[in-house]
Length: 329
Image (cartoon, rainbow, N blue to C red; front, side, top):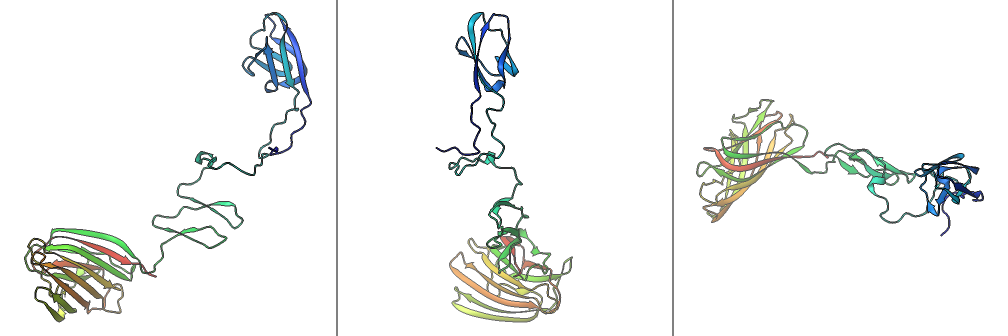
């Protein structure tokens, strides 16, 4: 295998000195100056330990314990100072490192959350840590990726959820212009009172104040498997939006309701805030299904900041409501 690295100087300055111990003398004079780690010493053929059994300072060889009395029993082989070259920092250059030879412990320290990439010159570079919720985005060829806020593109972001437990109402507040549209799902809604429907009213302001005046208009289409018929309804000047126009939820085992509600552009003060809802579920202990689809709006030009759900009579015995926001594109 060829030598890798800088070419060392030729090792030509090797010497051998022989001494006779007397059992008391510990210091001997070498013919040439050297260093402790450049010397091999044997006493009666037994190799001595550098820095432990002896030390070398210039031409002086000093033993920790005096060698025993014997003729020519001390053999010293050594190199002079400078004849053995030390490898300079960064002087070793190798074309290959074995697979899996570099461990994490050998890497330079960094910042938790950073990612290693490469710059336009092909050199390694650390991508700065992003913020919670950000995503790693490609910056194209020749540039490292960056952490950025998630883009829009019509994706919904989960905001909060409420699980009803004999609740008079369930409300979501703090709606604003952060999102173009809000999506509310409700699942496994069971009323406390038999044969009741779900209502929704909209609120304004920081309070909020819920609008319960005759300012709502809605249209409904529903189908009942039990009655094998479609039903259609309309209200102008109602005090609420009837989410379950033809869907009266019972309290018998297995009866419940699921649904979605979309609240469109609630922060817009120039338009009427509108909603689109769908609800469905089993009636009469799962023996038949009912489906409703309703559109409605609040005929007041105001920013809507909240929405509240109630039953037409009694409390919401159980069920889960979840609020999502549609990211702006």
